[in-house]
Amino acid sequence: MKSTSRLARVLGFRPMTVALFTVWLGLGLLSPARASVLMAMDLETLTNSADHVLVGTVEKVESHYLSAASRYIVTDVTVRSERNLLGVPEGTRFVVRKLGGAVGELGQLVHGEASYQVGEQVLLFASERQGAFYAVGMAQGAMHIYRDSAGVRRVGVDLAGAELSGPALAAAPSGRTLDEVVSQVQGYLSRRPTQSQKRSQ
Image (cartoon, rainbow, N blue to C red; front, side):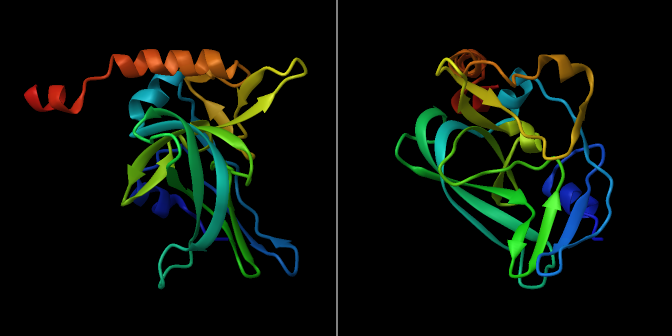
């Protein structure tokens, strides 16, 4: 088993526990690890922690080693922006990175990390870490958009085997309508200072 605790700290993640499974895909072997426990983040915290916020469709998912000398796998995900909430104009493509993935016969799974499927829509909150963008709060910042039985678009969070903890747990937005969540995000963003305001402070 390879622990990602050091890598997560370097990249600025702050889960209470980070665990990684190393999977030999050809043999079906899975090394043991504890599940991650993430500090729950409410919608206001997600919004205020993000450098970019958008609604978009996942177009491409590509895994590779973090560097030529690294054994850690990361996955770059290309999302086409369809609704710009912060910094990603409609029609442009945005690349967000996640820990874990599969290269050849080796796969690494980080519990609590964001998940993406080609063709799905997501509401993404992304912040920069060491020259790449990652979902804020890991899985919490990459909300999957789905339609309920009445055809209403809602958001959901797939924690990928992790657990949430902390006082913000009850305020998690999962299950709410997309329009409601987007409206609330826009309200939080409208109260954020602009770059010029920040420079003048």
